[in-house]
Every structure is written in C-alpha cells, then in structure tokens.
Image 1 (cartoon, helix red, strand yellow):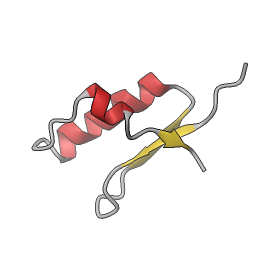
Image 2 (cartoon, rainbow, N blue to C red):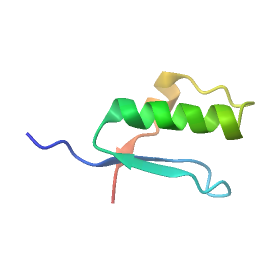
Image 3 (cartoon, one colour):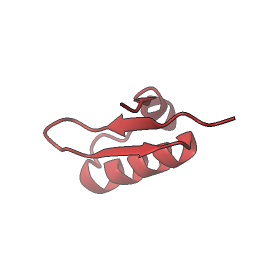
Length: 56
C-alpha cells in the first residue's frame, strides 16, 4: 500500500515547509525547525501532528 505524501508548513513569513510520506519524519523535522528557529513556540507533538496536511 502506497503512503500518501503529506506536508507541514510554518507561518508564511517564515517559509519553512517539508513533505514526506512518513508522518513521524514530518513531526521530527517540524519540531527540530521550531526548536531552532522559533524556540518560544514550544510546540508539542500533538500540535505538530494537527498541522499535517495532504501535500499538493
């Protein structure tokens, strides 16, 4: 079964966006980005998971 491509995008002013077939990889990359560029946000895994959308 083929996994669907998914994405997570940061605030448009930031411009960060990542795509993957692996949700866990998306979450790890988004949290790493947030910790590096937006440490004041302190996003949880559940918050990041809610940001996942099908990639266009």
